[in-house]
Image 1: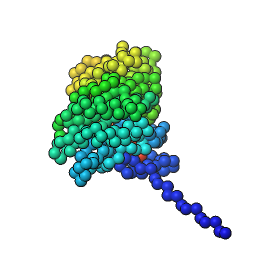
Image 2: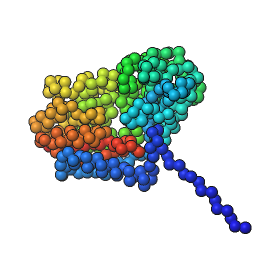
Image 3: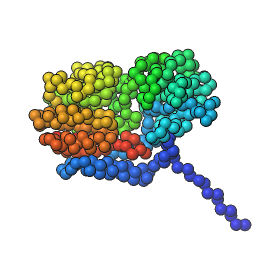
Image 4: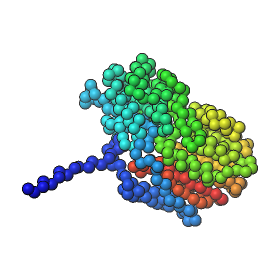
Length: 398
């Protein structure tokens, strides 16, 4: 009797929260090279990089389960009033893709968001309707510490409802989620901003504790911290290696210093570091993190926009190292001008520019090279696998 052929098994590709394919194996490396080459081409379209050493890109240590934070929208669904949508917005729209689980997120983060989605109607929590500015729960923001699975949960509400928040906390803890810190973020104004500056603690600690190498960081609900800590550790180690270990006294400025990730690595190399950060809670976190790691005698923080602090910077100890890690908007024109003027008078200083957006890095590079500065080296770290973004590290010297 002839043997019947085996039925073919359909292998479904992995997709992310927006339905885009996730590449693994050779496909991942091919996509990584493609976006790296596109970034370098974009840089070359703005300015000449002759004499610059272009280093190989650095793949992410984790291709799945690397995202330790998520901010998902919760929206009333007018087509089905008893239902709601929870997930990310489709690019360029305010339409929510109704899914919270994604292979790029950690397993504990996926499980947390899935449980929250299930408990929202059970607890009578009203999803937000941005058309009428009614309802209550606008976003759920969560961060998971990558070594402990401890969670900081922030419920973004139009009107704080402490009873509902505490009931949700109870259910999540009963489902074995490690809720280290829970907040309500009161957000009363319409608009696209996800978080306001008003946080109300519901339960637990004031901060979530994270770690990179042997450094500890305490993170608040509004703090920026890299979504991929495994790759962030490699990136900051690279910056640490670039500046080298001091045998004598040296000074460094960390502009756009955030909660002190780069600053503290510079302190470990022996530098006296001046951190400049315009977001007051972030600056407070950086000072607290310096104390937490026993580096308080090497770190000083100033709150304000870099472009508004020219007088104070002129009176500070002049740096041997300057690091900048701005938002995707890049350097303000006044900051680029300040750096150009500095390097004309201090040719031994080294500038390390960390950027998640090649478009603005290329723009700023063109401005900076119109001076005594030269772009000596550039490399990229895949902080965001399966997206078109990379984290770039550019080194400038005279």
